[in-house]
Amino acid sequence: MSVVIVIAIAVAALAVGLAAGFWLPPHGRRPGKARPRAVRSILLPFTGQAISRRAFEAAVRLAKAENATIMPAYLARVPRNLPLDSPLPAQCSEAMPLLETIEQRAVSQGISVDARIARGRSYRDALRHLLEDEHFDRIIVSATDSPRVGLSADDLEWLLEKVPAEVMILRPAPDDVRLISANGAGARS
Image (cartoon, rainbow, N blue to C red; front, side):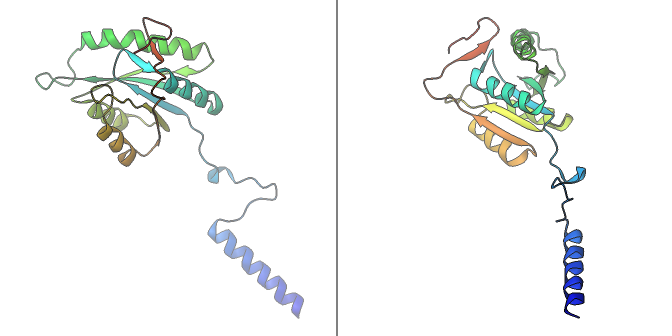
C-alpha cells in the first residue's frame, strides 16, 4: 500500500510540474519554445561625425558572440519648419562617410551590417521613430559628459524606461577619447 502512495505522490508531483512548466527533458535542455531567443540585431545609434570606439568594439564583440547584425543608425534632426520627410543633404553628407566606415570595419571582422538614417524633431524623436518601425534585440548607446553632444541624460533615461529591448549604455573612462570617424582611423575629440 505504501508503494502505491509513493507512486501516486510522484505522479501528482510530475503532473503539477508539467502544468507549471518546470519539466525538463532527460537531456537537461529546455524545449525549443522555452529557450531564450538569440539576439539577432544590435542597434548602434549615433548623432555626429564620430562614434565612441568602445561602443563600436562592444557591438562587434557581442555581434560575433551572438551571430547578430549591427545596425548603425544616424539620428538626424529635422527642423520644425520643414516636413519630417524633407531631404537633409548636409546631415546625410555628414552621416554617410561614418556609416560606410562602420560598415567596412565590421564587415572586415565578419559581422553583417544594416545601416539606417532615422529622422525626427529631436534625437529622441528620431530614435522613437526608428524603434516604432523596427525591432531591435539590443541597443548600445555611447554616453558622453557633454550635454550638447549625442543623447542627453533625459534621452537615456527615456530609453531605459520605455524601450522593450536590452539597453547597454557605455561611457568610456574620462581619459579614453578614442573615436571612430570617417576621416581618421582613431580620431580624438
